[in-house]
Structures are given as C-alpha cells and as structure tokens.
Length: 216
Ligand SMILES: [Zn+2]
Image 1 (spheres, rainbow, N blue to C red):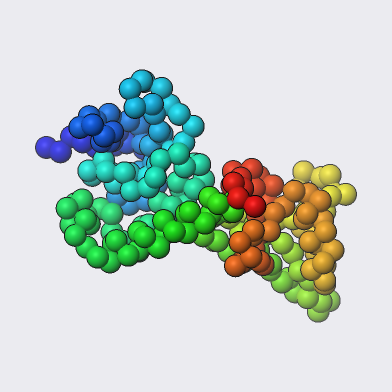
Image 2 (image 1 turned 120 degrees about the vertical axis):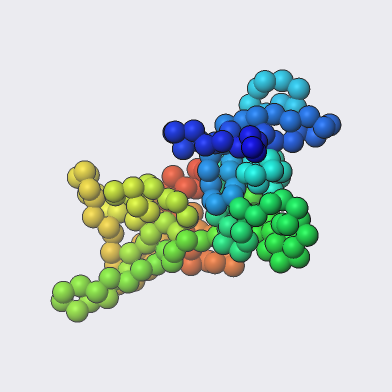
C-alpha cells in the first residue's frame, strides 16, 4: 500500500516531502488541484514553519514550485499547472513527458512575472463589465480580476462600490465613462495590472494585499 499520502476526513492530506539531503518530512497539505497539494515551508533542520508555501506533486512528494510562495500565488499556480497536465499520473511518467515540461516552464514564467510585479499568475475574468440598464443605457462597472477573489458580496469577486453607500450591501458604482470609476478605484486602493500586458485588469484592495509588488 502506498502510504505516502492519505486524505483525512477533514479534506486535508498528509504528504511526505523530500527536503533535500536524502531526508523527508510528512506535512499537512491543502488539496489545490487534482494531484497537486500545497504545503507550508519549514526550516530545514527545525520543526518550524517559515513564511511561505510551495506546490508539491501529491503522489511522490516532489516539489513542483520554488519555495517561499505567497499562499495566493501557490493556489493560482496549482490551478494553472493543472489546466495543462494531468498531475494524478506517477512522477516518473510526468518527468519524461516533454509536454508537461513545456507547460510547467510557461506557468513558472508567469509565476515569476506575477511575483515581480505583484499580480496573479493569471487573470480569471475581465475587470471591466458593461451593464445594460432598463432605460437603454450602457454603464461600466469594475470587478476584481484575481482568481479565487472572495472579497465581494456572497464571497464572489469584489466589485467597486459607491463609497457614499454605507449600507450592508453597497451597490456597484456604475458610470457611462470609465475614467470616474478609475479615479474611485485608485482612491479606494484598487490596483491596475502593473505589467501593462493586461492594463485593463484590476485587483481589489484585499487581493492587492495578497499580491504585493516586489519590483517597480
Ligand atoms: Zn479581489
């Protein structure tokens, strides 16, 4: 029986990760995508967590990502890796598959850009959306484009709201022109994609905190 990974009734897994120097350590793991889990980083020689995470191949315990990732980046990375390869396959098969290498290289490059510029590994949705009113007007509203954003109403993605609306469920701020919305967004701590590759994409203040910029 393969006892390197087990799933508990809580949905957490235990994964035995190679730590280098021929040693291993069994760690609690968050299931992040089929065949991939997230484990916390730890000091090599001490039973002590550090401040980062990494993505690991569940069946073999082989790290797939660099260490020291922010949790948001680790989750996005696992999702992006799983969209182009089947990580439930054994490590030996994955290791010899050139398509898996190509896909992994591309996603790790996106991760490196995301870490440098303080953004997500990929964008999950368009930030600008057009709303058609009953009176026949077309108005813009701005939504957070970050994957897994739960800062909005009903734990959906955040939408820029009217700062003068202090009700429990403030209404989305809408305008026929994008510029006034951009002014409000900046004032509220929303951040635009810093690579300028996706200049139309924005992240809410909550997601901006979890995707700090390390590069200007
Ligand atoms: Zn967000």
